[in-house]
Amino acid sequence: QVQLVESGGGLVQAGGSLRLSCAASGRTFSSYRMGWFRQAPGKQREFVAFISGSGSATYYADSVKGRFTISRDNAKNTVYLQMNSLKPEDTAVYYCGATINPYGNYNSYGNYDYWGQGTQVTVSS
Image 1 (cartoon, rainbow, N blue to C red):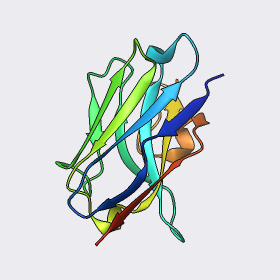
Image 2 (tube, helix red, strand yellow; image 1 turned 90 degrees about the vertical axis):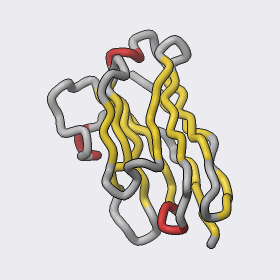
Image 3 (spheres, rainbow, N blue to C red; image 1 turned 45 degrees about the vertical axis):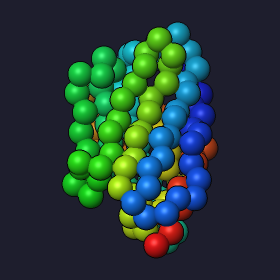
Image 4 (cartoon, one colour; image 1 turned 180 degrees about the vertical axis):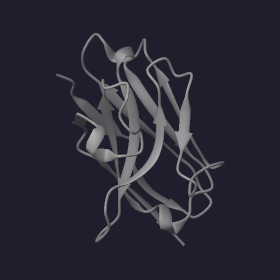
């Protein structure tokens, strides 16, 4: 069982930055592949970024590539999402997910086993 708690959301102007954190419980955090997803009102949850258990592999949605950076600190059981050059269309609730399955599609939310409660990010124009 893994419990995830996101933090770091808030209100920011377009062009600004935020860093989201996702703290995980448990002693085997490095065994979990981690992903960030987001969900805007009236829309489906969409993939944002992924990081492998060791941190050696990362993938991003095209819409955030070059602006967002995912990282993790396994000693602190935490994964981060640094978001720069934010746009109003980035406004959403951001969720982190964890999966121990090494073979599932990293960009499909159905392949994640555990989710946090989400943190709201609002970007004003």
